[in-house]
Image (cartoon, rainbow, N blue to C red; front, side):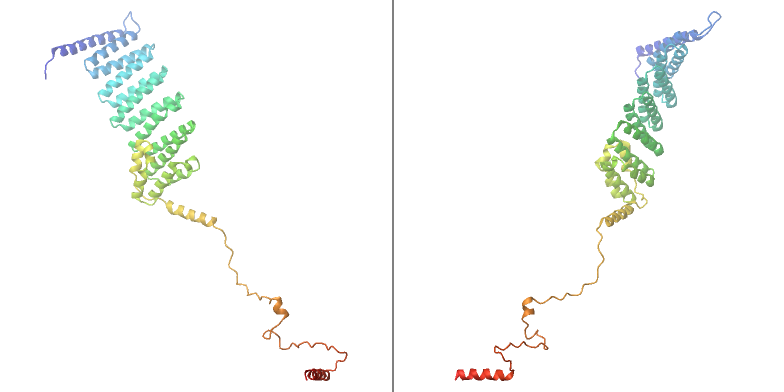
Length: 371
């Protein structure tokens, strides 16, 4: 390494000044015969100056202790809670640099409480969100979830409903990464109440789909199916999310992994939170409770009920006998005339009706005429 005397002297100078400030702060806190009360104001200022010198000297451990003492002195003084919160915030940053995450979380909570007491809720939320992001990067998902939920609590207290959505969504994703699905369902239910109060139906439809996916990931198909039945009683029934949820449940119920993977790759799932979409793609089709078969039976029953009722088949009627036309009835032919019928005899033109003798006389007269 290259020796740089100027940097070395600068560090030594910072350490010497810091030690002098620590001595002055310790002196201000002590009481004597003629000094009955500690001078917390002077002590707080001296501890702050010492901490700044330790930071310049890159002595993070000593800077952490000096900032903590500064915050305590400001609290004891009682005239500047904001400065106390700022001191604890700086101490939390030093603890984070030292990777002392447990102490960092404690200092963050203490600083946020002081910020809120001074009416600086935005400062408290900003600091906690920053700490949550750091915890998320470090893979401490449970700590990150807790910090995000603290932000949600602050926003709720301040009646800032619209500003709850983002930290609540991050808390949901952290619960998924930590595989705490019961907590995820609880937070999703809380998110649903927020969307209902904001009358945001589009986001509420996505929330229904997210809850169904999480229940399937937890292995509770019955709860997922029950959620679906509850959801379709609302406007969810006419949404794109409803169609995707129905396909997802059927594929899971039929234990069809290929179909399940195909459904989870639909575009509708890309609109969900990133961790929920990843969870949907990783679902394993374990089979359900015969949902698909039950739906098919119900559909067939509805079709049968809607079909028209047919009358029962009756015995064939005997062939009807058609009456003859009037012309045939008036002039019977030889084939149709009854053998018992007697032909009518025309009445004679003369006055006597002599039977056969009259007939012979007529025939004789006709013969004479011909001759």
